[in-house]
Amino acid sequence: MDDRPSAPLRRLPLHDLHMAQGARLVPFAGWEMPVQYEPGVMAEHLHTRSQASLFDVSHMGQILLRPRDGMAHLALALESLVPADILSLPEGRQRYALLLDDAGNIRDDIMVAHRGDHFLVVVNASMREADLAHLQDALGPQAEEAHARALLALQGPAAATALAALLPGVESMRFMDSRALPWQGADLWISRSGYTGEDGFEISVSAARAEALATALLAHPAVRPAGLGARDSLRLEAGLCLHGNDIDRTTSPVEAALSWSIGKARRTGGARAGGFPGADRVLRQLDLGPRRLRVGLRPEGRAPMRAGTALAGPSGHAGHVTSGTFGPTVQAPIAMGYVDATLAAPGTRLLGKIRGREHPVTVAPLPFVPPSFHR
Amino acid sequence: MKFTEDHEWLRAEDDNLVTVGITEHAAKELGDIVFVELPEIEAMVAHGDEVVVIESVKAASDILAPLDGEIVEVNAKLTENPGLVNQDPLGAGWFFRIRVDDIAVLDDFMDEDEYQDHIA
Image (cartoon, rainbow over all chains, first blue to last red; front, side, top):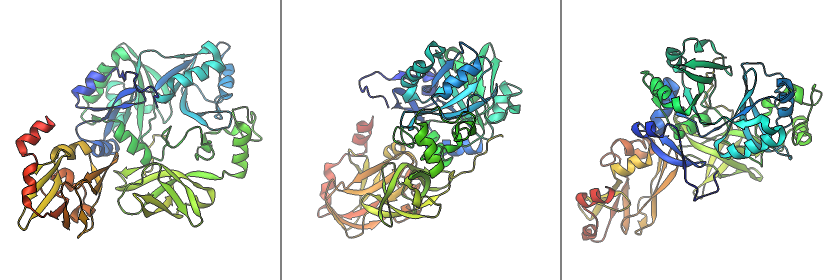
């Protein structure tokens, strides 16, 4: 979060378009962001799952890593910061990675795309400056922010059809493919990815051409704008972590149930075992199991169980909720949180206090809504 | 119908009863309501007490008792169908009925024109 309360909020390149679309704006990580449009969070969420929604995620940082001594050398240097396997990332592919601190806890979660002669790294809005400084500490001037670019996410089952209407050929991209395509003179950096659990694309476009692209996408009958509110309920149903809530400097990749993002080559016995910040602790947790684990939670009844709710098990304190809402697709309250590893099995019954009263809550498998990625 | 600064509406009924709900403006601001916690029947409440909790997809909000009195009836339909508050805030989305000592207390609240000025 932005800790400078008096700092003026930054405006998105598409600010005027959002206003014209009837957006309600809220401050988020130092930016004035659309939280919802006229139809509201529920309708925008359901539209994303049935058709397609356009999200403006230009508040996220886009950092370019340009190699001084070749891509392999740069990949190895980046591996000194993350436990993901970057060296094996093929050209035209993107991978989820975690920037760790020296204790092996999570500084940020990022996307790394191999774009031939450089990497594109997308980072969380609240971490833009910190991540750039952190990358420059390790990589020097090879890391620089991609200036004046917007980032749009087109998400939902109709996303491929809608984008292919402007860019024939994108429908052949697979989940986590990354490609550069020209559109009316603009250089688009496209990946088939997103953060809703739906098939979709994230499109980086110059700020100057962002409004033309967004307007063209919104002209498709299946596409409507959606805000941060729907993005949050969609990602929670998809079991995806919100940086600052579900993952932060107190949680390790293993505790966060993100071990899948630790490359085989980076694990004990692997070709490049360790060599990332906090590797000893993280690899020990991988071998021995963590003491606590991020899990899905299904509160009984209809009342949402919000972040911060303390959870109790048979012998007292069991953990706490880190994200909680009402899932519009699930049509029930859903949450995620950290619980003692002995209480992390799906079906385990716990108690969470809502407004002073104990409510039963059951550990549930994640995600709550199965993903429909185009693999 | 009378209105409070907290965007509740108050409708006088027979027998010193007042029906309480929230305005269209408030329902829209709150967004999609997914859960409503209603007060206990026969509870004695005082002006300013938290009597109803509303959860939208985004956050929880409290509805405060606009009057001193006894809760005599609640809209149990909201438990199963909280979306009624968004669909019909001035009708089927009412929250509770409260019995007051003197119905004249309603005179202190805004009428519709005053409320429209208040939210303008």
